[in-house]
Length: 438
Image 1 (cartoon, rainbow, N blue to C red):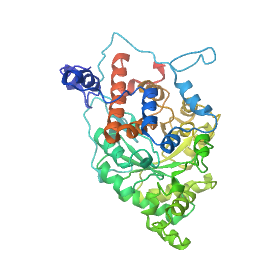
Image 2 (cartoon, helix red, strand yellow):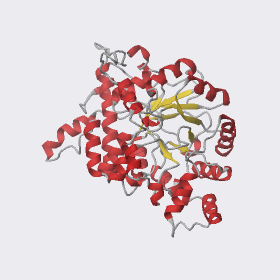
Image 3 (tube, rainbow, N blue to C red):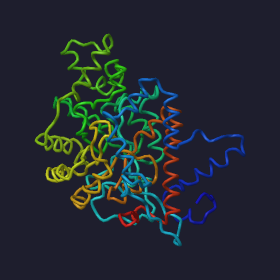
Image 4 (tube, rainbow, N blue to C red):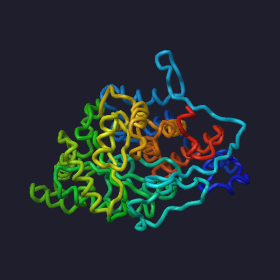
């Protein structure tokens, strides 16, 4: 599938991502070299060389002794050990048509899925309805990660730009370091989610959601697992917290309600950015949890603002919580343990996924994140029942190494990896990836 003259290209409704392999193989012939190695371990090492100590610690730190982070990788591993003999492994199918029709994926469909061999395109931004099907280039999206300015001076803008270019969903974090409106402008007509850390101030919550919807964010994702920052040794040892240094509060500082709150507290953000940053993050994190009783209010508020757009809960790890999400009317959930950054010693997210899909997979839209490092991880999550996966640290490393160019290189490499795995594994489209392939 790295042959640009392959006749199967005519059958595809998405780009032939695997041509990125050929492009890199050809570069030495024109005096060029590939940008950098995207093998996750080497990618991480290079990012560490590029980042400040604070940037590296914040991006790489995990909760406690990293047991949950390591569990995510062990569960996804293709290798078996005496201690871990039941790792998920892909069963390829050979002597079959080894040319994927496409990697496109409909998300948030509420009716029968269309043929994935049918050529589709993203509908205009405001034509989206509550029953809309978005069709994106692959079952992969950009996970919400905060304070991107500690990784690159342009913050979230290069990431949103690449997401638009590749037609992959982009998710902006409430802890983002760029105003909602500016991120939307960079993302253009791209499909986008707004990840909410819900303030204990209803007026501020409404203001954030209103700004997000007016800026073209069509999905609200409430993160449930970060009402208190996890214990991360490196960050704590270095006193490394960007918000307390006056960095990363841009979404709050551009919000009229939060500006009013600062005035009420007597804080001038221009003169005292540290106190302003602390006031912002303290309003959404730091020991102030929400309970199930508040979620119906948030769902109704978002539906009223957005005209009924989808609402997800992120951070679901138990069957009990998944059932509760169904009961209170969530449209979807994100099975996630925050990449092992919150609860040390927790269940691997992939193991949680299998149980949750078995319990409620036919009742709610299930997406996944935590520990995705390559195409095999994507395929395993899809096979276990996720409709879609989010990628985080990979694109953070790319952003840290080479800005927009780095993000593009990492994500195009992941898409090529997925395209090639589907090709050599005998999968013609994403629908064929189910539990029978493990």
